Image (tube, rainbow, N blue to C red):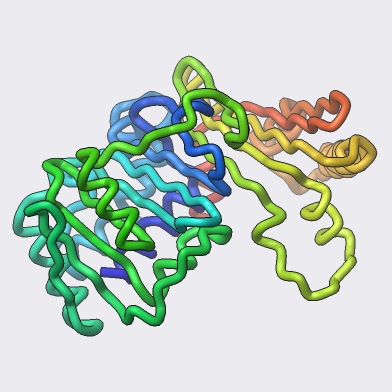
Length: 309
């Protein structure tokens, strides 16, 4: 179960897939350290996402069908994942998950170790792992799922995964709904668009190891307050926007200068195809005080060719 969940979450993180209902800052708890919303159904049916989803079908979904007999393409519509530093990670998978698939997932988990069925107000959930391995630190995505995880299919149309038992009990009480802060105060930056296909964000500082390393990369992370990513369907193309909010305006300006320099260098690279050169030319960099914004528009077929390479 854990390996299957990790594989799905890793793929979603890599491609930053979309969500069915857009997320606003008020939908997240105040102390959220990272979030990811993914809507596979939007990828299947959207103009911009269709080519990328076809790649996913060939490269990922087909292997899962052959290995474990679970068809993600028909049983998973969307995934919501986020965490806070005090309570750890929550993952909510929505879709017409069949009883057969649920049983297969539980059987896979049983092959990895003991399964501990539990109940909360008459609803069943399962614990996989050892009590001593429960980690309520949600700074790094999915890290607290490595050795222990709570799982439930009790809410119709949803699979719930949590890092702590209290989180699972709260989700069962609310029917799988998460209570957000209701306003932007304390919540992470959230980018949005009319046809959003990706919404993700994080506070990078919590993911930096305290090893005394003061190199350039570490300084960037230490000076970054938060970062957010958005992919949207724009007339059949993928519009990409990223924002980085720095503690120090000078750092935002420096990073913007580096990115501009890299773009300028690659624009003269004769080895790049016309599609990549067009992508580079369409990339815009903007720095306003401590906020660095990067945006571009990508032909989804070009993205697929990059993934194939």
